[in-house]
Length: 118
Image (cartoon, rainbow, N blue to C red; front, side, top):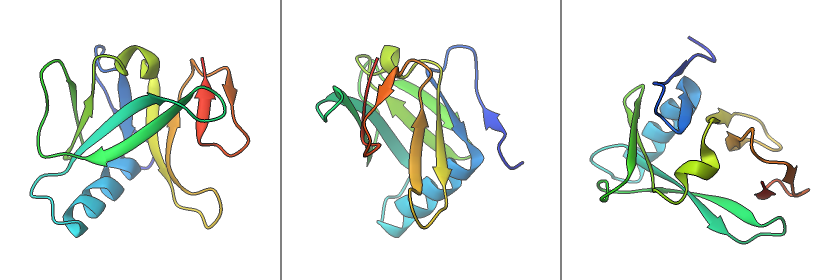
């Protein structure tokens, strides 16, 4: 159970059970009827790109939709190639905890951990 992830060959990102469980809990706490999490890559930050996570009410045309442990994760077409092969995890720690994207394409991460370059 612990670190096992649910994935198909075409999914751009793998979601761990811990990440799904935490996202579902947060979505319900914020009043969302369905736990739908968008993972987006935006330009910016000190290393070039940043991840943005937000809850949504549904998918948009062209989105990759990943179902994992009761959570639906949406990736837009521009972000998908950048996160390809990544894993979304949740680290429960006092310092440095939270949602983390482990992206094998990232060649540099900024010291703050908020941005990356590929």
